[in-house]
Each structure stands twice: as C-alpha cells, then as structure tokens.
Image 1 (cartoon, rainbow, N blue to C red):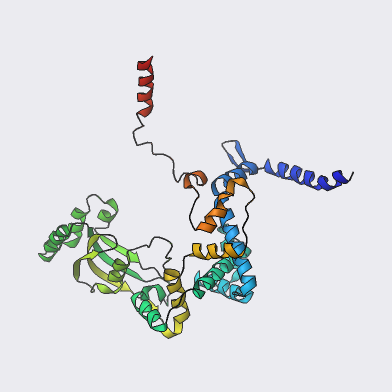
Image 2 (tube, helix red, strand yellow):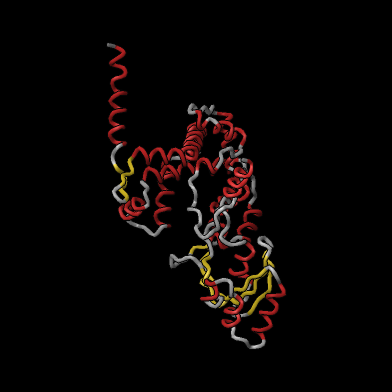
Length: 349
C-alpha cells in the first residue's frame, strides 16, 4: 500500500501530461501538430542550448548569493530603463508588447539579472583607468549617442564599393568630369539590383550600441567614415576599409546627428561598453564558476555540457541541435552521385 501511495501522484501526472500532449498546438490542412510533437522538436533542436543557459544562469545566481553583486532594485531599475529605451512610458502597453513577442515580465527580469551579474563578474576582472576609458569614448562616440528625437542617427549618401581601387578611381573621374552621379551609379551597380534601383543612394542607420559578441553591422572604419570622416557634399575617397579589405567612394548628402553627453556624465556606460569589448569572455567566467560550484548533468544526451563549461570549448555539433535554416533550393541541380553509384553497381554485376 505504501508503494502505491508513493507512485500514485506520479502516475496521475504522467496521465495528465499525456492528455495534454495529445492536444493540438496547430492544425495544417487538417493535420494536427500536438504539444508532444512540439516539445520533442524543441528538445531535439534546442535542448542543449536551453540547458546550457539554465546551467549558466544558476551559476550566476549562486555567485550573486555569495558575492552580493546585483540587487533586485538594480534589476527593476534596468527593467524600467529598458522599457523607456523601447519607447514605452506606460508599463501595461509595454507588457502587451512583450506578450506579442512571446515574452513575460518575469522572463525579461531573469534575462536582465543574468546579464547584470555576468557584467559585474567581468568588471571585477577588468582593470582600466579613466584616461583609457576617455580615449575609448572618443574613438567610439557613436555608441553613446542619445538622439533627442528618439530616432537613431543616420547618414544619407552615395556609396560606391569595390575591392579594386582603380575601378573606383574611374568612377570618381567620370563624376568629376560632370557625369551625373546617379547615372554612374546605375551603370556601376549592374550586378546589384537593390543599389541599382536607388542609383547608389543609401540611408545608413548608425548603431547606438554595438554587441562585441555579434558581427558588427558595419566595419568600424566605415562607420567612422560615414559618421564624421567624410566631408559633407563632397566626393571622398577611394578609402580602404581595412577590416573588410575593400575600397569605398562616398558622397555624404545629409547627417542626422545625435546628441552625445560629456564623458564624465556617462562614464559608467562607457566602462560597461569597454568591458564588453575587452573584459574576459563570458566562457572564462563560467569556467571559473564551474570550478567553484559543482556542475553535474544527469541526462546522457547533454552530458557533454559538463566538459564544455569546464574547458570553455563549444563541443555541441550545430547540425545535431539546430534545425536547417532554410529548405534546400530547388533551383540548384540535384547531385549526380546517386546515379553514378547505381551505374557502378550495375557494372559490377
């Protein structure tokens, strides 16, 4: 009887989950996709990624309990700042916006706390003086722009790009000889329908924040060239964009500049950005925490995450845990290897 009492709740739970799992989450052409199928696909494709984040999150929470790095008040303050940065003053409207994105306030607060603790741990291992911070600020001022209109700064310009400097020298000569710059751009971009349609004229948004762990939206030298390097209403270049190994010829037509606060007023934000660029990588922080707090993964499918955190190396194979980004293109010719194998089998017989 004791055995029965212990396991009865578990049996009921499995039964309830089973019933819920058979409910449809979507119906396509009369065919049902159940919650079970949905959960199995999520676990197969994103299980390791999700478990990795949960492990990292718990390591950060343990570090925060021990070192008192981030308070709930700080998290709430950052939440309100995030809400305002997204253009919301009314929280109910913001919560409705989050719901449309499939997010909740609790989930967002967890993410904010996660990032704040990680930042504090990285800051503790990053030594930097005010002089270095101020130099970093001057070199990356666009990151700290505060547009008074609430709109990001933009640059409207004619842009010619090539890996061959001589090609751009020819373009420059044509324009200086009186050729219409729009016609030159139309001929120049014969293989680029988008730029050909705009006759080489583009409006580029200058990023207010640059995530060092993501590919930059523009090479930094091109960003600085557009933001301040190229004179207004003058043909400028060709200029080598070293990071991407190509040349550009530009004519800046208009700059919508953003307001930048003095360095002393935003020193904490500058330090945060500096740490994001030059502080220890998050993987090192998690490796250190894994030595302090034991990590044990019981599911054999994800056991490799223990070694991954300890070694700071990504062991996961993307093809195993991520669905294909897109379906194979039907315009590509099919592989002939299958036919050749069949032919060789017939010849061998």
